[in-house]
Length: 235
Image (cartoon, rainbow, N blue to C red; front, side, top):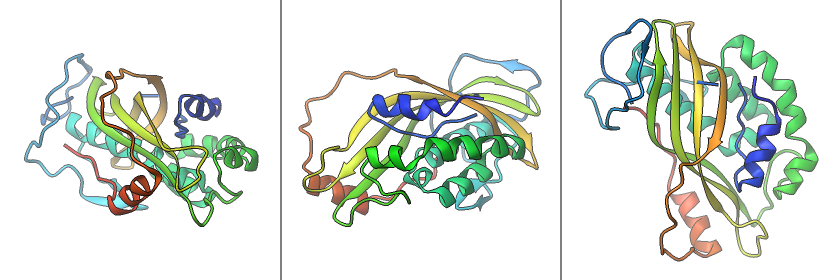
């Protein structure tokens, strides 16, 4: 299992996303036993309903196909990259929803130790993961695309290339919202009629050249975060 130290690594890289546990483009075809591919299909609508429901507010009911595995990985990256991971009750709910039961049981205590009061304080949060009243804490993962590394009937390895935001928005913030680029790889298993994470890991990049758009002020960033909700990512 990827250890709790990953949180600190991401923080140093200007993003503190929770990542514990390892695991694309794909097609709309059914399961292909033992298939391995390094080619990604375009991240575009396929015309097939990607999810059938929600579990703890997170998309669930993914198809037992490559497309379904990609949708699961992208949605799980969004959930695990959210600010809910910094609040104990929400974190446990997210972990239970996206990991296999065995993996979830092994993760909770190490994660609770990682998200200590000192760690939260370093981000400007109180011991409950709440920001000051005049500030907005931002933590988001935004998938750019997915790639199937391998696929079989009951297992899949899917990589999600994503950009991320983390920081404290608000006047006087000493930790302004910043961006990072990462690739998150998930090992998935077909468990209880859905894809669940067995293990996962991250690496930096690939990162594009920075553009020439000037950074927004604290007020504009706060308004954007509060005004633009997150997506459910699915092909």
